[in-house]
Image (cartoon, rainbow, N blue to C red; front, side, top):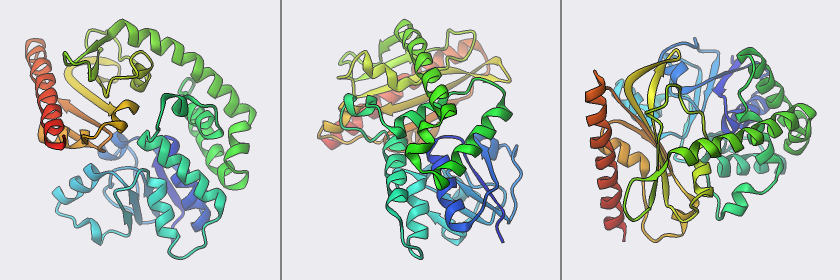
Length: 327
């Protein structure tokens, strides 16, 4: 009945595909980003199982954990509960997949371990900087998957090999493969470059220094960084907000992209924050409580500059409102 899995091209997506393929005995896997599904650049049908991505025009089963994707389905006039598969507010899509198949199958310890690592990585659920930066098979494999140099087709083949290996060999052996080790080491070297880029644009959104602001709108090319690295510069900051210009096929536009995530320091604070709610309140996007993004369309550079200042002010106002409400 099902012959292919279409999944996100990150650790959680790969883990979700590995689990789904294991239980459904499916070997064919295709990888995509959310935009590929939203813009119908990937064709899916009733024989496809979609994981960790927005709901496409059609598919046979859908597993997801993003509230924004559920809301988008409702806006299309579809009841998410009527769709085959499972959607839950979970730290990872892999957890949703395991919950579904755990209703019928006994879950082996190595599959639970893989899912727990996907939970931690996808939700950024770390208790300290040291835990986040600790060497482990999951962290090494996550770094390898984040390395994107080279031809797209070669990367897709690597993702397929990793997905198959997670089932056949396990997490530790997969992360220890010579290919994964080389990519992980290359990504870590690239992190050093990212930190320099972050340092050059490092600032704060607020005078209390709760939110790190990385404004890359002045760059001629999109800044390719992992914004979470900013908390290595200031571990006490509660969140990091990255702002980029939108690029279409490498060409800079006047549209703005906002991406925000909670830092590890925020998890010890008594007040709770929901970054997805901030983006939804501003009607520019959505996301998880711990990570969210949004987009603001602008018709000209002067309009973009006004929208940038206004949106930054609005994000800070919502942040403070949540803090006051949760104190």
